[in-house]
Amino acid sequence: MAEKLDDLSVALFSELFMADQLARSLMAKALPKGMELSHFSVLNHLAHSNGEKTPAQLARTFHVTRGAITNTLAKLERAGHVHVRPDWDDARRKFVSISPAGKRACAQAFVEVAPVVSKIVESVGSEKVRAALPVLRSLRENLSEDGQ
Image 1 (spheres, helix red, strand yellow):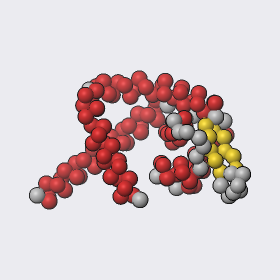
Image 2 (cartoon, rainbow, N blue to C red):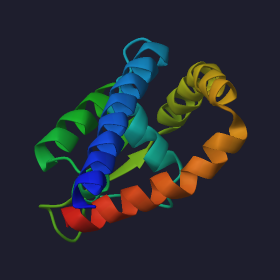
Image 3 (cartoon, helix red, strand yellow):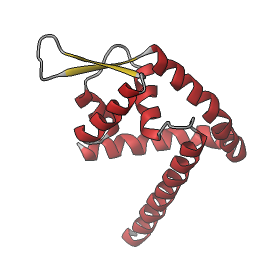
Image 4 (cartoon, rainbow, N blue to C red):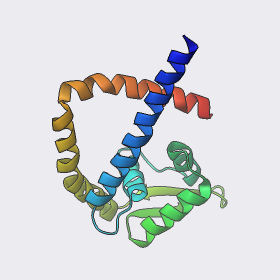
């Protein structure tokens, strides 16, 4: 029984890893010129968040190092897509918010990505995708708990 469960686990994670790689490649090709997947992810998160976030909060959200998120935020700030300001009460901390240009860039990225993603969902079938979402969400939640 354990061997069958191991086979199932290996098959599941093999499919997840391959799907992740293919999805990232597809998204990277569909994003506007100069926008990286990490930029789009941060902009999308900030566009749908209420208020500002600290770099540490963003690093935890995306499960990356503070150095990685600092690099991404620096690129987004140079592009005018985010505002980074100091915390007035604690000079060691910063706050990040999306700028109007960042909102426009995120919206444009969605315009370019949507047809590509929609084509995949249509090809798989919306009912299958709908059925897979709770399973994928549960996997994500369990993986997130294990990573903490």
